Amino acid sequence: MSIPRGQAMRTELNRRTMLKSAAAVAALSALHNALFAEAHGETTMATITTRDGTEIFYKDWGPKEGQPIVFHHGWPLSGDDWDNQMLFFLAEGYRVIAHDRRGHGRSEQVSDGHDMDHYAADVADLVQALDLRNAIHIGHSTGGGEVARYVARAEPGRVAKAALLGAVPPIMVKSETNPDGVPIEVFDGFRAALVANRAQFYIDVPAGPFYGFNREGTSVSQGLIDNWWRQGMAGGAKAHYDGIKAFSETDFTDDLRAITVPVLLLHGEDDQVVPIANSAKKAIDLLQKGTLKTYPGLSHGMFTTHPDTVNADLLSFVRN
Image (cartoon, rainbow, N blue to C red; front, side, top):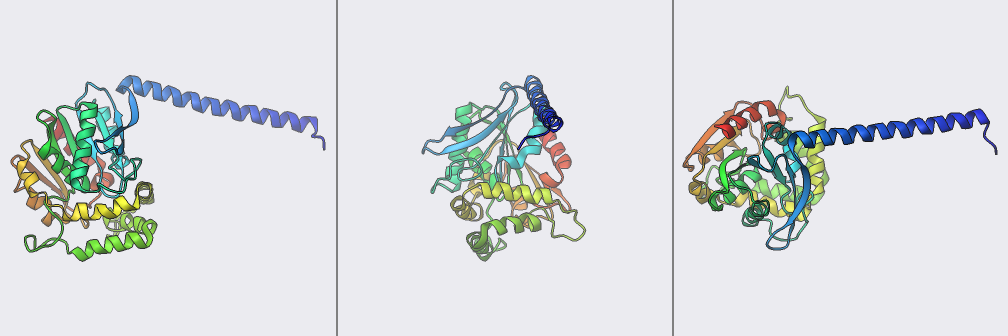
């Protein structure tokens, strides 16, 4: 079957137009990346291998001579949860780094080592590999526990300050010594939901208490819900299952007492995931140089729903 000459010409013109358009988009993208790199320094994405042979993914953006800010994500997410803050502090001239915890995101899905001691050791290996000094470590939720354990044990000169946002320390679970903690049955429910249908569980959490979208009158962002699900499902079920014990049952009391650098605690007063009365309001009394700031009505994911507010407070802490 032959194609009419006019139709063939139109097809060829359309093909050439598409190719030119694709080339133009690629050129613009390359130009943007080049200009961004020139303005802010080299942008790299890489991995390190920890002392026990686990591959950890990290992002390292900005000038290598800039003061490093290391971001530690919450359960069961990845370093991508800090995208807004990384871009914000990159624009302020800082070197920004975020890693995916072992078993999470793009890091290796190993079977073992999903506990705070291994998490902190992995951070120490990352810090040593990148030779980070005078760094500021910022952690959210489980990442706040990771920061507390790492900073308490860090080599002298490695850490300048730390910030804990909606963080789990000193300890979440209810016990004889922590009678107003969260009952173990709540965390057992997390484990059961993860095993039964992890994909649905990772929709229900961000659609409900994590961002406070279950509160009447709250503006719901489907994009945030979808992004939470994307990050969660990229990680491993075993790491996430074990991680529930790590963030709920680890006692950080001695870690908080051992930290000598300034620590900023930021917490939403309507945090339904890590209740403020059992966390930040106890942690502040254990820190040598602690400052607590709370946000009326804000949720566990406050730095995502209200980045301008939280970023301004973090920048003030980092600079002063």
